[in-house]
Structure formats: structure tokens, C-alpha cells
Length: 246
Image (cartoon, rainbow, N blue to C red; front, side, top):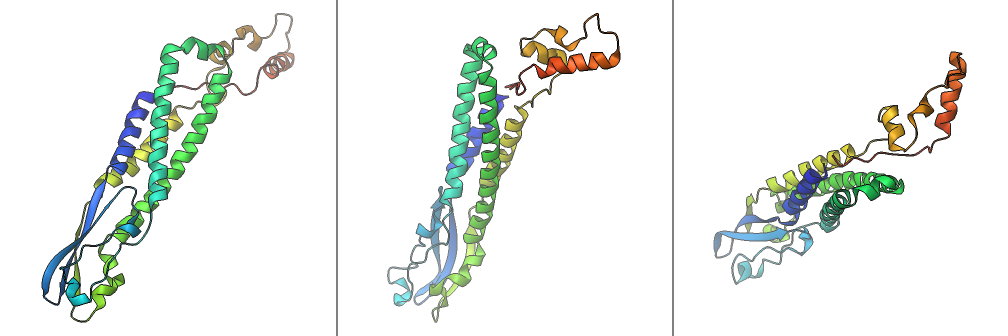
């Protein structure tokens, strides 16, 4: 399971962190007709630092001022990518432990509990980061699409017209969101909650005798038998968990 999770996490941060696109406008003004101006943006999507190129050296007779995109989505993008990298590193470390030190893991009950805690926290953070990044992506599409033209003051100057031309497809960013959700499903599937396995197997996992789940020969009444089994169960540790890496 960790093998697939590590692969999906690689693609998740690669599709987001490696993206670069541009928004293109067609500007007509004094001495310029349908001149292409572009704004190039990329990860981590600090759009408020991205400026459109000028239509011509004379800047439309002095009426064209620097035009910036709107929005700073770096925190959402970096949160998503950073967590994907950390999950990938954790998967590699976990695989090393399970391949080279499986006997140590099985003999120490603290390792499964530690795995459970880390996995639950990771699953929560991953879900949050994926939805935060999905919301940021929707805002990025708005901030780089045709809706930006009404907010450009230079396009409102007399004799100046601006038309939206194109924006780079963000299909790979959509894929990063899908991969984020898929990774979250993988993380959740690695957890088996306490007592989710059959009782005899759980007894073996805890290193206890299977006889602890059976009544002694001297107990004949069903009620007494139930009380005896319950007493045996209460004597066990309450929070043992099996953590599966596939």
C-alpha cells in the first residue's frame, strides 16, 4: 500500500509544483492594434507579483500602467506540496522499517501506536490541504481568466480596448487535486481500527493465549462463561492497533 501511496504523492506535488502558465490579452490603443500582452505565472502562485508585458515601448502613449494579476495563493499551494513531500518521505522510511526491521516493529507495541497517531494526523492534514488547494485552484482560474479585464484600469483609458485571448490549460492542476484525494483514500486504508480483526487473530497479535477467550472446564453456566470471558478481555491492553502497509 505504501508503494502506491509514495507514487501518488510524487505525482501530486509534481503536477502542482511543476506548473507554469500564462494569461494573454489583446490590447488596442494609440499606435497599437491587437497587440498581445502576457502575464506568466507559476508555482507557488503569487499572482499579485505577476505583471503583464507592455503593449509597446511607448506604453500606449503613456496611458498604459503596470497591470498585475490579483491574489496570492502561495500558502495553499505550498501547504499541499510540502505535505505531499513529507508523506512521500514517510512512506520511504516506513518501507525501510518494515523491510529491514519488521521483527523489531512486531515486538514493540509502541510502534503500531506511533504509526496510528502519525497516520491519523497525516490523513487529517492531507484532507485539509487538498480541499484548501482545490479552493485556491478555483480562485486561480478566476484570477487568470476573462473576468480580470473589468478590473484593469489601463483598459479603461480613452481609445484603449482589451480583449481576453487565452489562458494556459490547468488540467494538470486539476489532476493534482484528484491525486490528493486518492492519496487521502490510500492513507485511510492503511489504518485498521482497534479490534477490527477477528478475536483469535487479535489475541495472537497481542501475544496472549487464545485460551483467554474461552471458559475453563469448571464453568458450566452460560452467564458465568460470559463474565469470565469479559474479565479476561478487561485484563488486556485497551488500545492495541494493527497498522497495515499492505
